Length: 233
View (spheres, helix red, strand yellow):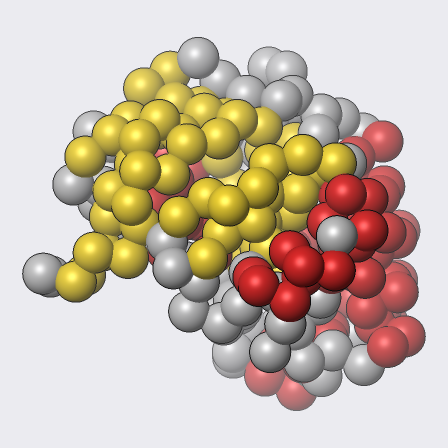
């Protein structure tokens, strides 16, 4: 579903990613693990073409997307949930969802507002409330739900558990598991390895912009040296 080959990317003269290569299979949930500044967010932005790779290629669903603009990548069926949420502050929850509505897409689940309210019951309770009155966790749920209104084949989640209360983290984990059951492919960046363990099939560990490990997430949990080298604060 998603493949990066020898991707280099950065900001100006500062190279953040060096020779990044990995694959995400259809229907998988894969966690991109690493410390702050390891290159997780830059990897997701490079996939979305918000940061243009200087070398290497990105393919999505068999299509080369490296030369596309970000809105064209989204139209191809790849959703993106940024770390800073970016809700439409003065619009209601329902208006935020309706703004993102897209037609049904072949090979992807089609979402209605009612189905998203079932996935995130908090949003149903706040349907008429302005988005800027929601809690941080509710805004995170709204951003994910708004992305799903585009009926994506796959989504990129940047730090979905960061800064959330434990109860909201649990609800987010349940929602991601529900998305997987519906066949949505998910690549999520995370620092919280325990959250990643709950939702992910595999792990990719990144440090200083280089891939250090790709494999079962249980191996990361079992390897104290790896965790100390690449994941400990």
